[in-house]
Image (cartoon, rainbow, N blue to C red):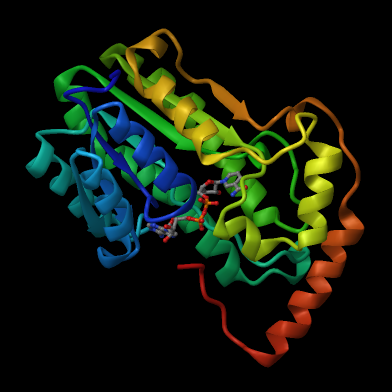
Length: 281
Ligand SMILES: NC(=O)c1ccc[n+]([C@@H]2O[C@H](COP(=O)([O-])OP(=O)(O)OC[C@H]3O[C@@H](n4cnc5c(N)ncnc54)[C@H](O)[C@@H]3O)[C@@H](O)[C@H]2O)c1
């Protein structure tokens, strides 16, 4: 076990990639604070960890709100004595649309969770990591944090590029304290988020034409990358972006714009019948 005696916070770990990472860290011996928008939503992940003999608690809270984030970190310190590993995973996407048709609310929501959330969580854990002279911060960015991979999602691309910059900047700021800050850039992962925001045809073409290794990333692929960056085996690695993308970023790929335009038209038609904007829960 590589993470015995360590404690971790994984934001947005009620489902999807965050859940996979929480389970992987727990399998290596870490005590995990599971986070989702509500405490109830964390139960499934917490139960899976404890059923396998691990330690976990669930703490509901919105990463874009400073008081929620402070409560999350306080709970980790109270239950597990500190935070050795922070995985900033919580993230949202909006329905694809062109930038000139994007509402200010949509922009603010995506930036609020994807970028401000990372800032708030890092800010909240750093005093205790600095006091202990160690820590591992892993930001879940995206291939969209390196280059535009999702046409029709300028808000998402900008937010993930922000996460990339923040990762590199913070790595320098805290290096003296032996705190490593790295990012994982997943390519396509079949999670509820991906299913909600793409069509089946888009997903099929993405895998067959844009990902050289010919499959979506699994939750295990990402869990393994997170365990590596959380463990002592990556002590000399900081400020890096680790693409876990089956090779997506290595090529130019095919232009999937027609499919996204079709998806935008469908979304517009659907929006007419249900007004209002809600972030995925
Ligand atoms: N799925 C992909 O293909 C893919 C690719 C690249 C990057 N990512 C990134 O990986 C991360 C996880 O994505 P996913 O596909 O597992 O998404 P998901 O929607 O399946 O799960 C996201 C989790 O975050 C929680 N969450 C949402 N907003 C929150 C908030 N404000 N505060 C706390 N928790 C919140 C949700 O409740 C959910 O549990 C995101 O940052 C996403 O941008 C995903």
